[in-house]
Picture 1 (cartoon, rainbow, N blue to C red):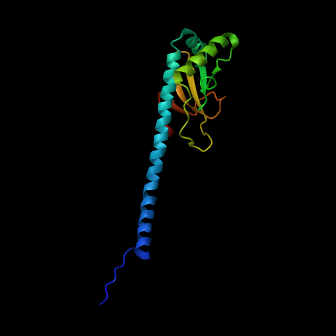
Picture 2 (picture 1 turned 135 degrees about the vertical axis):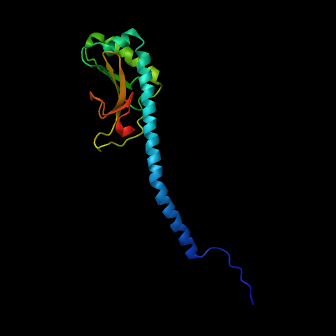
Picture 3 (picture 1 turned 90 degrees about the horizontal axis):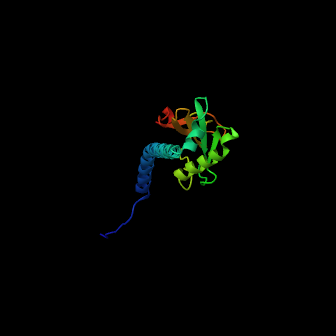
Length: 174
């Protein structure tokens, strides 16, 4: 009898292995996507904390504090931070709108930008709870008591946070 030395895999064996790999990939993919989304949300919360610290540090300066907390409204200061911009273009104080403190406002913008860092933090999680409120800008609100809240908003003209990240995280980011 002649002895044959067959080496390799048959077509059926290869198809079975590929099918098993496809089933495993299908089971693992949703968990991986959830993990990536959770990581992006966590990154945004961390960036919001960095921005809050930068604003608090800038408010140690009397002129900056005065700019952001002077007024009778509950929200006296609104700062828009544009993701990915540089120190010179990334921070804009949109409220108060009075021209009495224009020089101080510019100095406060520079101080905040310097404290944030060279580039403004990017928004990592780009999905929205309802599909329409996709966040594009960081927003910081200051009350007349000096309370600071940081979150995300849709446009650079918004006057309210779409998603609040610091100090309390909105339910969509939890």
